[in-house]
Image (cartoon, rainbow, N blue to C red):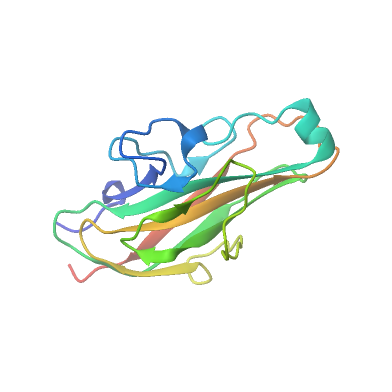
Length: 171
């Protein structure tokens, strides 16, 4: 059976039993929680407070891309943001965890602490996406999600964005 979209999971970091997106600050991949590739403040980040939207804020979450197919490799794969935030005062970006394929990503101290050495981008197409190469069945790749809220940002409902991960297979 070929790889289908439901075989490509986006999981939280923060420990094998973590189910709380607020604790997805890197470290071990959660074994129980997959999240939607449509990401928002509501399902990955807490809503920003009035103080944060007045002063501006940058927050991070550590996620894992997991090839959950039983036997087929995902090749020539890439992760990207096909739909960024609709608000003009927020922007989502992603960076590959520097540890690479099937490694445990670093852990950050809190949600406002940047990772060491990762470069963020907001590529909007598969062809320009961040290459995750080949992931054999069961392998994972860490990815960092960043959301920036500009200084003096107004409230914005449904400030959602999407993360996409795709590739090819030999099946």
